[in-house]
Image (cartoon, rainbow, N blue to C red; front, side, top):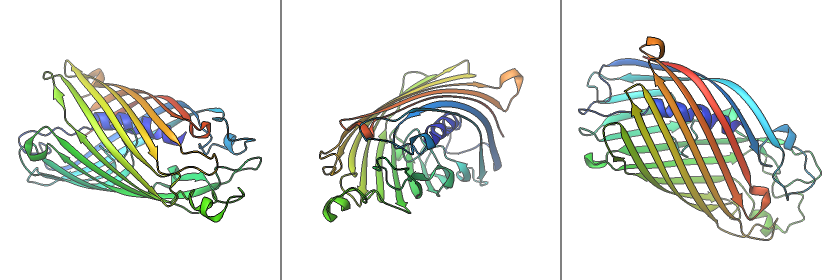
Length: 334
């Protein structure tokens, strides 16, 4: 559930904060900039891997768990500082881009113009304790499963308008380590089988985007990406192949709408000894966003609304999940 809410909050923020490159500069003025948003979200999630307390106990692994509903109010803050050359900017706060599209993290980054439109962006994504929980033993049956801290951090690189072309390249890396990794215990498995379930891992994602502008107010962007999950246990590691399509449309320079569709097919590396088969999985998501610029004549204000649907299918019921949510908020940018 927390991941769903995080996606809702940051998805809208990214849409409004998308960087516009013109004349070889990042901003029109040097100095500090701030973006502040307050969002209210409501959503539901259905997955046995969700660390909600209602999923702590299960009698079998052949179900997708209860449908858990949640709501929250969450602030977003981003600080930027642009140098006098208007080509270099340092930032702290919620990121404009992220390792896995649709989710985001607080980050520390720097952006620099390389040409009239070419931009290179580097960012470090630290661990966020609030969103770093997992089950010690996700396969526990007829016992109360306990939560464990999952330490995750990463870096990302975005090369926008490569060589002043419309093409954008992204690379993201994340490492994850579970403090109490017990998914290999209490299952009656051999040592070699238990080693296949270790979830400590490194993620690599490579993404290419090429926007197609139909006119000054509409932009359509096809997206291709490849993800490699190098886990210590090969039964939970995978190769992921994703295609996406994003469409944005501006009406009268005040109303911005966006729709993002994505589909990923995952090929897991080895057979899972708990279920005696190699997992095959697919993920589908759709996000629709609307923003209203300068409502009520407030020059720096924004009203935002977002709806999101994500669904993962698998030949193993335990790994299926579904997330649905909406978010509404207001923000100010200076």
